Amino acid sequence: MAYTLLLFVVLYYTLFRPSVRKRSSHYLKRRFPGRNPLFMLWDSFLLNLGIGRTLVDRAILGILGPDSLKLSLEGKSELTELLNEGRGLVMVTAHVGCWQLAMSSLSALDTQVNLLVHRDEGDLDRHFFEHGGNKPPYRIVDPAGYLGGTLEMLQVLKNGEILCIMGDRNMGGDSGTVSVDFLGGPVKVPFSPYKLASATGAPVAVIFPFRDKSGGYALHVAKIIRVPENLGRSAHAYIPFAREFIGALEQFVSENPYQFFNFYDMWTNEH
Image (cartoon, helix red, strand yellow):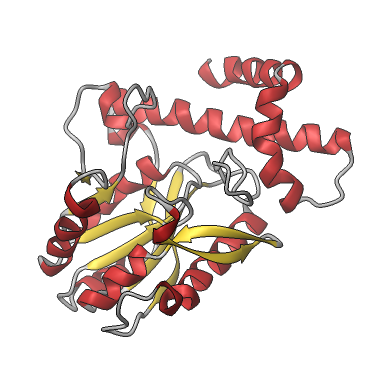
């Protein structure tokens, strides 16, 4: 019932709310260059439908529990081997699929999961566990804390735990970013995941959650990045690793074009 209603809601907002189409156009114009207006309208509908389904599924998971949706962790043995190195694990992901749902699948690794996330005051976007009043399956590290949470993140890795960071959107100023090309134009992405890996010797796993054809969710290990230790503070030293992440993200959106949910212009400084 919820999915059926969602179709009409998304259709209305796509057709009659130009602001909704504009928010999705920045990415869609680069993912589908030269698209005619009619196909672009269809692309916008599918992208908005994708985020709508994600929000519905997130509420279902929070209210009915983990057995209500199919969640799978691909590459479990690979991630376990990385954790067994004893230096922690940096997981870099993006605003794709339903990352909050996928994070719950990490419980299969039997390791404390820590998520770097900042919520603005008045932000109404709810984590899935909040729908049912449950405890979070991961510990939240706030980048607004002391030194941007750096000391806390270093301790997480020293404890051999998992640290999840969004690699496609910076939570601070431009000083914490490097410029790399994504879908034909430069974007600014954070280099802190790779700097933390260099400081601690932790491996980096690029992971992307996605909604599969069955309607369930899977967490895919797209790439393993090894950052040499002691690269220092220079942002330039971490550009190659940011490029590796963006390369994996480009591959993901080529295969799943309607599951990338960064609804702002990444290709301009005005965001």
